[in-house]
Length: 592
Image 1 (cartoon, one colour):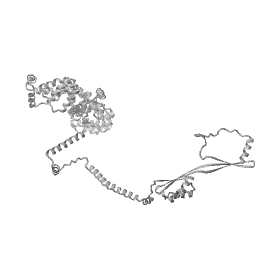
Image 2 (cartoon, rainbow, N blue to C red):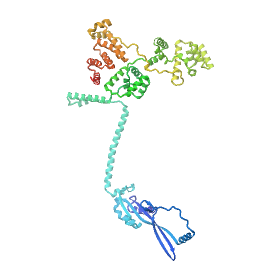
Image 3 (cartoon, rainbow, N blue to C red):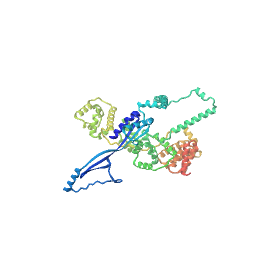
């Protein structure tokens, strides 16, 4: 309280001398407690004054060691001692007095008012009776308030110069910021209106003539060539080669068909470049024995060159685009064709290809399958159908099929169905089959929605498809046959005539090449080599036969024989730089 009172009094004095908000006072007051004891003994009186320690402090007998307090229980005084103490207490008077032992006042004030310090010091000392050593003035920087801003500005003329410079700087920022803001707003608006459409600006004939004025034709051609080079370089930097980027959800089934004839190393290479969701679907379709092999190859670290990856990429791309057939395609077709065609195909498969028939039949939903449906499912299907629709479908049904529906209907519904079947209008066999197909479509829709469960669907994998019984061998025109005959070596003419009947050697070579290609696609390299050798003997300039013969040797690990075929192929096609790089890489890896 004394400190606050002292600070307030001094602050009032300083505000009158320095002005408001131009100074700040901090006071520190130290108090001591005086204990005065007056005792009277005999005829005289003695006064004893004891200086205690400052308030709130503890006595110490050594530095850091406080004076111990007696907590032991004192001995109870006797009767005489109590009387003696009462007499001494009556003769002794104790009083306390608080004394200010030290005062210190620090004044912080604006250094711009330093010339008023003597006046302020004199005023404070005269009123508060402080000594000079108890009063300390410290000048410093004070931020002026809004009320004293103009006073400070007038007090120092240099402030006008600073204010003018600040004002000019603000005008410069404003002059720059407004056009820049308008530019960015117009730019953003133009980009939105552009909508991703590329606008190519072409110079007019006049501009071209003006730009080329003074240049020789050689300089103009050199400039155009450098511009084309820069353009090609920019396109090469923008488009980076990404293997197998053409594989997506649409051709995933065909990719699995290609994998049927590919080794696990190739499958692992392809999967390493695909998206995780595609890899998950492919692993789900692979047979268990292939899954383990592919996973083992994936876990093995292998260094591959870009040329090797490109060869595999091109091979997969060429195969995936032209893969046809498959059990799933056959099932889809049978679901869409006319019932007569479907029955004819199923009958043929049952008699000639029973294994394929069993696979297809387990995935097809026919009207006769209703007999195996559980009764609750049949009841739900009946609720979705109209009476006349069901009556038409059961027009020529067997007694077992008719009883299947009647037993799952109420008496009233069964009576209406019998009445409709007996007295309804006559319909053709095509209309009966159409109503059956409509009922099956309803069953499929309810099955997809999860409302009924009528069969255990067997998942048809592309690996369940059987291989084709014969390769694709397109017929060759007579001109091509003649060209093939001209390309056949003369030394082999009698052998060719004995096999093909004179001039049909090229046609026979083409057939052997086609059949060898089929064996090669099945990874039967050893069996395919004789067919390719025969095709090369018939036409040594046949690049495809040479290439497949080399690939077959390579697949069997016969690297020298494969390199001989590749060298002959490069001699025929010297412009094939990609093949040349691959052969050079193979020679390096084989140490040739």
